[in-house]
Image (cartoon, rainbow, N blue to C red; front, side):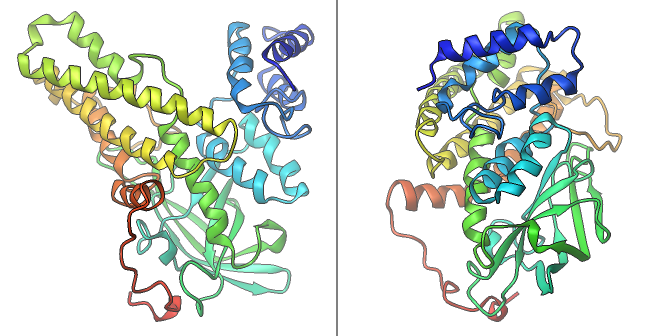
Length: 393
């Protein structure tokens, strides 16, 4: 069994041969992956050491203390949090060796081609078609709300391969090369003025069968792995006490006593308690992850995260008074990551509105929690046994 001390020793030996000050960033990250010090719970040869997942923080802390470069996780969060665990579970050995290393080092950015104009909250209703043509699949359809598609090299893609069976069946999951002919990425300007999201049109895109993840017709099963990991990635991050947006609001409160009112004071205290509860629940969730795959509990964390973010940004705008109405920049931009720290309160307030939509709407997550965590009766589903092609659209 690998211990924390074993990992500290491994990191020390690695740093002795790879000085962060004199080793190129990409060279350093590649070597770290090859040494099994990328994600330690992954298999040996795939960036890990088959070590307990809970020990990842030991490695990350040791590298941070040495001033080592990181892989810019906020820029490649979809790859790290969603694509990688799905590839690890369902990919072939060739797929794992091809994709995981450049994904972790950030050489190849990933996006997620799931939602469609007619299949957002009800993802299983998706209609993007994949038709078999020899050793290839021909893809036609439209995806929407695709973060960082404008810089992505690869995408995880769910398609409809059999319209004659119920909607949760007949789906197949692929890796899509975003540079292939027929892939058209267009910006979607958001409430913030930015276009971090995109819509993606797929017109006769040819994907080799070697790009398939999982069996034909089992795309929904594969997608569930992605979605469960996505919700953990969004809502289950490690956070220090009074960290994140709460820390920013609390700092403003302490530095500007003239802005305080009894009502704002009570709201801040309630949100402080909510944030601390979420932080401790997130710690418990990460302990559960250390011994198994993410389950529906990640949906609860993501739901709590969205509610807390929106409440905190609303309080921050009110606390700022007239300055809370200011907005720094409305020019259309296509950022590579969401910046909730380096912008003004107005941006954070507007951007947080999307937290209850992205990664599964809060309404859908409440259904998941009710049915899979609390064991309540499920909602009636009259389309459960109806072939997808016969569903009203």
